Amino acid sequence: MQFDWLVVGAGLTGAVFANEAKRRGYRVLVAEKRGHIGGNVYTETCGGIEVHRYGAHIFHTSDSEVWEYANRFADFAPFINEPLARYGDKLYHLPFNMNTFYEMWGVTTPDEAKAIIDRQRSEIKGEPDNLEEQAISMVGRDIYETLVKGYTLKQWGKAPAELPASIIRRLPVRFTFNNNYFNDRWQGIPRHGYTKLVEALLDGIEVRLNTDYLAQRNTLTAAAGKILFTGPIDQYFDYRFGPLEYRSLRFETAEYPQQNFQGNAVINETAADVPYTRTIEHKHFAPGNQELQQHQHTVVTYEYPQPWTLGKEPFYPLNDARNTAILQQYQQAAKQEAMVCFGGRLGRYQYLDMDDTIRAALDLARDVL
Ligand code: FAD
Image 1 (cartoon, rainbow, N blue to C red):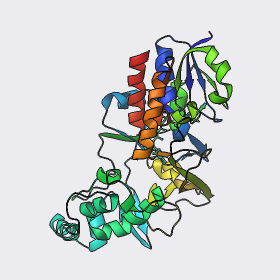
Image 2 (image 1 turned 90 degrees about the vertical axis):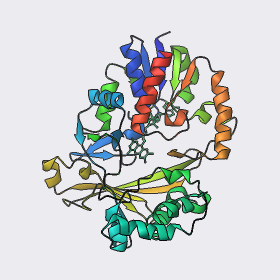
Image 3 (image 1 turned 135 degrees about the vertical axis):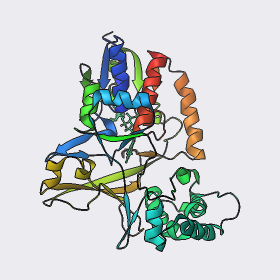
């Protein structure tokens, strides 16, 4: 046997685990089916700008061990995510805060904003039992209609009344003029992109790109003692209990010969008749890089949600009752695979932010290495 561990997938999960295994003296091989490392956090440089190829990625955490760990592999530049929302020809601040309430109703004090929200939320009687009711009970009907309804419809392909309330229960609502989207203690973006971070994690480890484990299962399995699989768990088992469903995304990227396209990194497009949900201007992820900010060149990505079908890139798991029941069958099957662990967002069929991904990979390494 050539390797102690075969890690399938060179995303954040696979890279952290591979690094931990190597550090403990194991011989590790990483197999990645794409032509690049990094999985969905992959960034590539375009005219000095770090372009987030699979959607905007902002690192935020309150986990000190994870923050220290990430900083060992990348130099993080400070960044505060202060997204805007566009509806028609107006812009609103997010997350919902006094700026949003001022822009929506012209109110300037928390008491005035609370009075309007209280009046509007009174249409919801009892516990909200879907996303629409949850949103109205949090911020009232005006904000629901303008900033939540169309965006949600596009994002999930379903009416908010058909979606679980839990999707937005954790969305911040603040009665202060604070536009920081995240409540976490630390927030930043690797100065040289996430790909460099993953490169540093994989330093000294053999990585085979364009290598689909499932297409070379026998040879690759024979080469290693144990396996961490970070691909889709249902695909590993040849969909024997049926495919798990996802929501997919399509990205359209354009380069413009201008210094500043929209003045902000992220603008949510909340109107139902605009087909994309977010416009990302990548240079604004590096506000401290003055030289970059001066260039007459910018890169902009439009994010289009789309239905997922087998073969399309899976993005957001649909953790409803039907898919949870299917997942449990796969999890039972996974218990019979003595030499294989399943990890990451696809192996666990769970949306995980990057900090949760690193935390889970470090915990897994502690358990099994
Ligand atoms: P992945 O990145 O998906 O890596 C899995 C890898 O396995 C892939 O490279 C894949 O090609 C490979 N693979 C699959 N099957 C096989 C196979 N058969 N053989 C070989 N290789 C295989 N998190 C944040 O903290 N902040 C954000 O702002 C943020 N924004 C996000 C925006 C979007 C649009 C999305 C979808 C996610 C966002 N995330 C964000 C979450 C972040 O992307 C994940 O935490 C992270 O990518 C998970 O890493 P992973 O390694 O588990 O999965």
